[in-house]
Length: 71
Image (cartoon, rainbow, N blue to C red):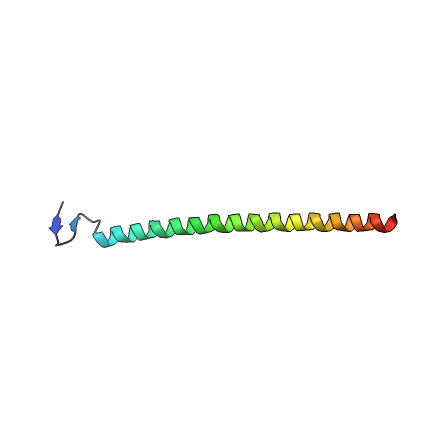
């Protein structure tokens, strides 16, 4: 394999440092996207739980009000 020495980087074969950096950047982007997706998933689950809890409380209060009115 051909080896080229530069002051900062040694490149060997067809995998140049620019290509390697592109792969590293792609991996970092994928990680940040997956972290964002996990965060969004957790937030949406929290919102669903919150809206379900609010609906249960509204029904409970309506039922209590109806019971007090009928008594």
